[in-house]
Image (cartoon, rainbow, N blue to C red):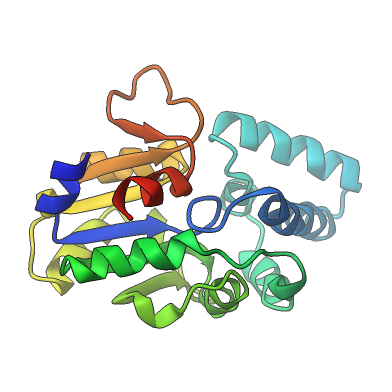
Length: 220
């Protein structure tokens, strides 16, 4: 792990449930899930319980990614976007000590640091500040812009990041909690990966850590 990080030029972090995690984050992000359900119910003119059933099936089939309901059920995701950016994460999230130290450690090693999220871009800075993470510690923050596809749905997103920093995908590391949303696309693009979850899937042979604090403890 240490050798892999030393050889990398760019480290890409997922945000939700990776950099920002824990019981209070779970409570905050549960609001996202509740908003998905209410937007789908209203848009399809169906009972909330029916919308929940549809979305739960999608979560089961797609590694917990309930937000895919908008594409699969043909519902306008911009309604969800507008509701998310009204949320105030300050009352939910804890200020982290280890994440700023981890980012500083990587920056001191001349690494470029990227935050990559399918969450609304205006909300990412609010989440970082509420978590005690200074946005300026990142060389690039990529998030969802209203009316545009989500960044992680772009199969060339990692090529784009490599071009920005004039490096090869093999010189980048993706750190994320979603095997299907973060790790598999990165592996297909030639990146090294660190999966953040208690147990890896059976077909994943790469590095797996229970949480981002474990990575911080190893490096700081």
